[in-house]
Image (spheres, rainbow, N blue to C red):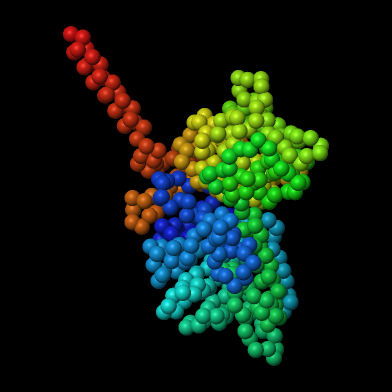
Length: 470
């Protein structure tokens, strides 16, 4: 789970400052305020980690990528090639990292990792992207202290010569070898040479793997999901996720039929498809839901629903558009493997206000959910425009004394403020009663102004009608 994130000189952000992440992290703001850029940055790092090109510092994306950011000059702040993109984040490890220094016999262990890096263009021509430096910090949550740090730094006036930097863990070079640590892998990785030329550096490959594990746990669902089909083909495979546009939603449902999900402590685990059907019902969208194979001879399936107020079963394309748009959201939230980070844009799109409110309750169920008796530990990063979604979360925080399902510290909310130059990302201060103490002006529109304006206009119209009647 991501604990903190900070990005500098990326797209509209000069500096986001430190973003404190929580099980549910929300980003609000006007259109083109830059809130989407935060998710785009994370997805670019994921694309880079999964790219086969180990030498590419960043992979901005291609035709089939989640994000396509263009060149470095397209993504850097104010399109200024002189700026360097700098970023840092910290995350909890799923299992404690522990190793022994073969030279000192000292044991080093920690359960959180922090990473930071600096990337920019090299030389007068400014046509080569280089990694200036990166650093890992291993820390212990219980002891609240750093264990050691290690990284790589580019030597001045060179494009591809690096040195290893470290604190509180002295590396020792092997005798008789010319010391050459090699070029970093992508934006984060120690090359094999670091291990080969040191007596006690084997653990750095574990740092690489932990970093890759973090971004492989990240999935993305965009704001525009695919339209519903009447028939879906499934060959028995298990997709990694529902896809960037929800194109694998039905395949994910079918692949997860053997799984059972509990929605909280001491709650009975239910079959995956039953959980999805119940959540659609909780949103007030349907009465029943089913995915059926056409025949034993065909690997094709149809999705049938029974909507409220009707006893007839209909195909998915024949119901409201909002159902097909929210179905990938629900499936991804419960399909993602334990320890996943799910990044979503506008999960509430095309839902009416009461369903938007109920969707917040679904997200609370997600972070409380269990599988095989173990917490799923899902983290949700959500960009949203929905006041109803936020209001329901506020209410549930206030009710936490009785419900014990959503604590104040489990929700982190930020507002992208473009009235300042440069833009700022302002944390919303939510107290234990669900109150927000620093509402931005006209955050969700001027509700009181509209009510007052309506009352004044109505009074004026009545007076005009009375005058005509006289």
